[in-house]
Image (cartoon, rainbow, N blue to C red; front, top):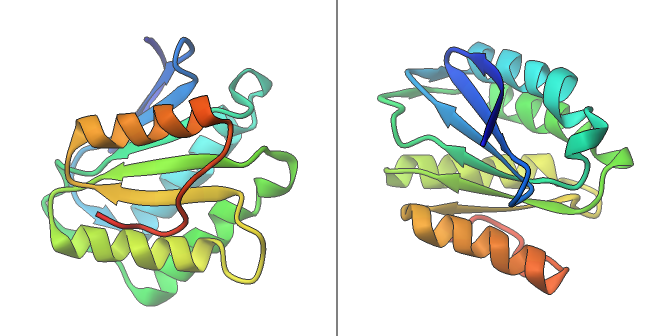
Amino acid sequence: MEVMHTEMPAQHHIDNHEKIIVTKWIGEATDDSLLQALKNYQAEIQNDTRCLGYDDVVDFRDVPTFKISIKGLKNIGKTASSTDQHRLDTCVAFIVSTNLAVNLVKLYAAYRNFGKMPKKYIRAFKNEAEAYEWVRNNRQANHLSSHGADV
């Protein structure tokens, strides 16, 4: 696994063999910290043509608290979808440890894909192996089987 970008609190690793971008979040998650990390990810990783079509696994299990507003979540979703037009349909598996985080992923998915055909298929998982299995199965099937954020 190649380390492409490490910035606290988001640490990104590129798995070129699996074609997965793995992000591990360390520490508190706030509107500002998530938005800044997303913008850095878009500029430094997502827009890198070597990562075109890669899926994402985002690990939020080590987040002690989420301080996220509805306005912030909408802004994060809008910002995330702003780079979709030139990308292939891909999926994002969020690994979470709480029901609150599951619900935040569901809201994020709704705001991110609001009013258009989704370019990211999003699910939340409490089990790491299941998250990776979903990503691999969707890649192997060459289609994405789930919209939403079910656990």
